[in-house]
Length: 206
Image 1: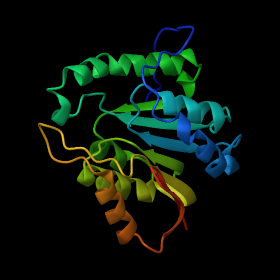
Image 2 (image 1 turned 60 degrees about the vertical axis):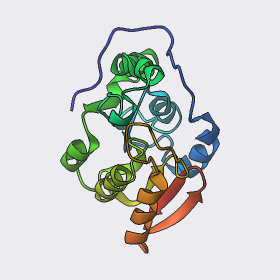
Image 3 (image 1 turned 180 degrees about the vertical axis):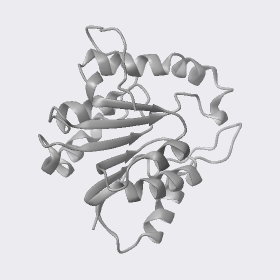
């Protein structure tokens, strides 16, 4: 895995903010990790806003690393939406510039590609936490969760975003992360403790 590299810019440039309302919860749940050496994973990175927050506030040890997995492609179901096409234009370049602008290039291991292909290549038990925020298709969410589970160490944290999200695109199947998340929770019952269950679901591996 190679660190993301790009030219320096003075300030990050984010066009969206879907995560700031969760940072208080993240700070509380991930507090034991702050300042210590850890490896974490983010599935679905978009512009890098949440990645930068984790690096600024949790993965503060100089040897900590964040593995970022994203194909940086507009989902097939949204390819007919001009607004979303514009939003995804140049996405990978924005992500890399934002990581670089905040001085985190050396801490980010960027793995561009589908999570179903990348996650099986990662080391089992190597992660202190994993944040699943990629595809919103139920079967993709379930697949990401199942593939992440053996990567997270005992006592580690698995975070899911958009639990109650429910949208049916014009050109694709319904987007219902809760269906995949609930299937995962049912299947792995007894192997975790639920810490948060609302718009996000956060569990700790036992």
